[in-house]
Amino acid sequence: MKNFDEIMSLLSKYGQEHLLAHYNELSDADKASLISQIEKIDFSVLECLDESKRASAKRGTFTPLGAVTISDIERNSQEYRKIGCDIIKNGKAAAVLLAGGQGTRLGFDKPKGMFNVGVTRDLYIFQCLINNLMKVVKETGTWVQLYIMTSEKNHEDTTSFFKEKNFFGYDPDHVSFFIQDMAPSVDFSGKIYMEAPGKISSSPNGNGGWFSSLVRAGLLEDIKSKGIEWLNVFAVDNVLQQIADPLFIGAVVKSGSQSGGKVVSKADPNERVGVLCLEDGMPSIVEYYEMTPEMISRRNDDGELAYKYGVILNYLFSTEKLEQIMNQKMPVHVVEKKIPYMDENGCLISPEKPNGYKFETLVLDMVHMQDSCLPYEVVRSKEFAPIKNATGVDSVESARELLKQNDVQL
Ligand code: UTP
Image (cartoon, rainbow, N blue to C red; front, side, top):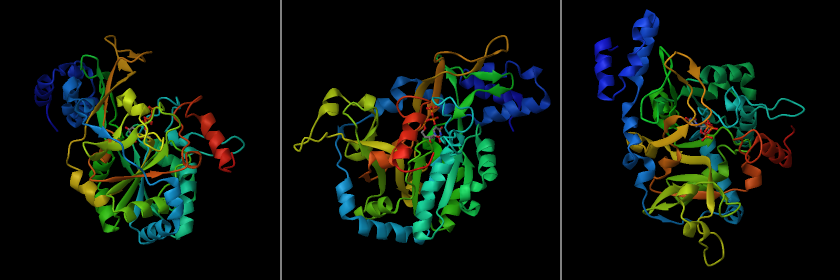
């Protein structure tokens, strides 16, 4: 561990000396904790406050990308299913649940997966996901290895919850948890916030850090020793998420693509969803706010939208490619957020409007690091019921409605 002077000189390089302003008032244990928090900070993200270094500053030329459509999939379903099921039976596919987010929009103070969407019975988001994965376990007679990413903020709650609920019937020997890295939160001038005299304000560093965090947790050896070749990465908040879907795996493998992304047809041209397309000829996701009016309204000869396929945070990556790209730097997204902070009087303030930035890397940027990515179209009403908000669009209400439509008892 570095000493006070070494830490001070590190901080002065980045204009962050204020982090030690209360150092002398702290107990020995808190002093050591503060130093260790500072040692873990990745100061390089601060460079991204310079607009020219932001992820959004470096986009290339976008062109549309067609998908394997619902009717293509129906036509080839037997073949895809056979390929996918064989891969699962041979233990070559695993699933990675991204559950390190803070779920601020939902306004639930526990990990999002602990939210109960049930009405007449308990039905937790985590439970919905496990139930969905169990369908594949039953179909193939094989437990699919499940890696769950948490964050420092929700790890304890998440792991205790799974234990308390007996993993909702899943085999705990096939579940591993790992904790994602954190990034500091800063005010608009780039000064890192403090939450308490001995506590730096930090937040999970975005879902793009999942593979590096998994490697740091020592799980790459586990993956390799088990012979896992494909990782299906998915978000916690879609209760209709189909995980380790044999047809999806089969279609990607059959196509010879290096990766795949589940997509839905946009509900309308202006839907606020990232679209899987090409950027400078390589697979990429263009965010809805990056699309020009011309891109939004462009149609193919058959009248369909050219930029039609929105991503739903369900990707299939090959372990081999992930290893190749793991040391490449990912673009950092600078996001305005409401950040609780300690004021000059030592009081913790919860601001009502955004007061600074958080830094995040995003799994969708990994798509652009692939040589190819197969957009795989799924039926929205069967596979996409995200819970982002308490009410309205993508909410608990809308997800309950979709669960009912899919005969899930609430
Ligand atoms: P969101 O982008 O919806 O973020 O995450 P969030 O933090 O869950 O929710 P808000 O924006 O604060 O309301 C999409 C997926 O990525 C995971 C989330 O848990 C979710 O599965 N995620 C997000 C992480 O695992 N780590 C992160 O740092 C951020």
